Amino acid sequence: WLVRFSRDFGDDGDVLRPDLTAALDLPAYVAESYRTAIAGIDRLDGESDFEYRMRRICHLHLTRFVRVLLDRKDRMSMAVGLEVRVPFCDHRLVEYVYNAPWSLKSYDGREKTLLREATADVLPKSVYDRVKSPYPSTQDPAYALALQGHVKDLLSRPDHPVFELVDRERVREAAHRDTPVSTQAARRGLEKTLDLALWLDLYRPEIVTG
Image (cartoon, rainbow, N blue to C red; front, side):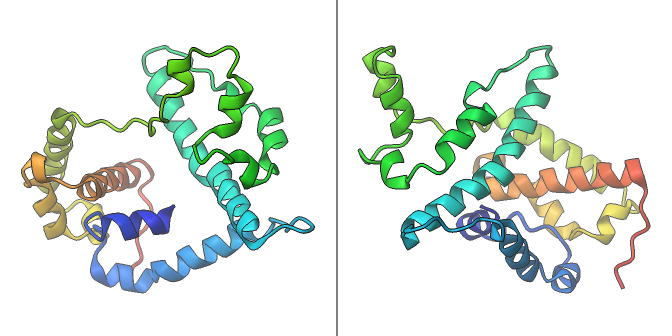
C-alpha cells in the first residue's frame, strides 16, 4: 500500500530534501521491506498464483495497514472517552477466515461476500445491499486550514532541526496553497512534517546526514 499510495498520488507528499531522499534510497528500502513482509507466507498445496497473491495481499493488510487504522481508531475515540469495539478483528475470526480461498471470499463479485452471506438472515436488506464505505478521512476545509496554520508557525522558526530533513520551500508552497486545490498527498506531506518536527522536539536525536 505504500507503493500504491506513491503511485496513485504522485510526489506531492514527498517533503524530504532531495539530497536526503537520494541518500536514503527509499525505493530499495520499500522493496526490501516488502520482501521481509512476505517472507513467512507459505504457499498452500495446490494454490494458484492468483490465490497466493491475494492471500499475500490479505497478510500485508492485516499485519501492516490494519494496525495503523486501529491505532488511529483508539486515539480518536479515547480522546473523547469513547471505547470502540471491533468484533470482526477478533483473532479467532481472523485466523478462521484468513486461509479461505479468495474465490470464496468474492464469489459474487462484491466486497465482504462472506460477511454478507453469514449475516443475511439477520440484516435488513438495505444494510445487506449497501456498498462498503472506505475508512473515513476528514474533508473539512477547516482541518486543512488548521494544518497549514501549524506549518506556517513552524516555518517562522527557521532554525528548527526539521529543516535539515525536509525541503523548506516545498513545505512552504504546500502551506500557502489554497485549500480547495490542496491534494491529499500535499496534506499528508504537511502532516508528516509536523509529526517529524514534534518527534525531534520530544526526543532530540542527533541528526547525521553526511
